[in-house]
Image (spheres, rainbow, N blue to C red):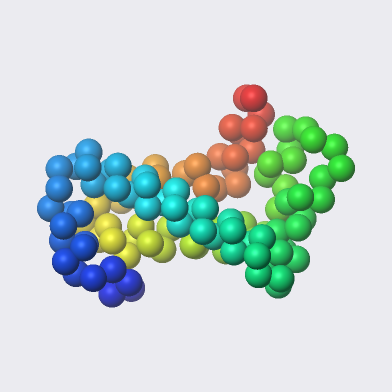
Amino acid sequence: MHAVFPDAVRRFVLDQPGWVQFTVLILLADLANYLGHRALHEIPPLWRLHAVHHSSTDLDWLSTSRGHPLGQIINLVVTVVPLYAIGEAMPASWLGQIAAPFRPQARLSRSART
């Protein structure tokens, strides 16, 4: 799994101070989430799963959390796998915190507050 990123890139990131590692992982998670979401829109079989998210006829606090379970899993995996691939030495709690906003429950509670 760690072969996704060249060892030199992984070492460069992991040799940085903790706050730099955390910042890089946040940016990586956001980029991976964006690319995964774009794939859900652009690839027809994935769109059929993701279309559930866009099928809400009324915009309410549940609209953002609506989604096909497979689409949610795909989005989560696409976001977390690159973090694991680069962050072997990162504390597990950091990886969990980075992944938290991409879990459906987090989106639900964030939507409820707005």
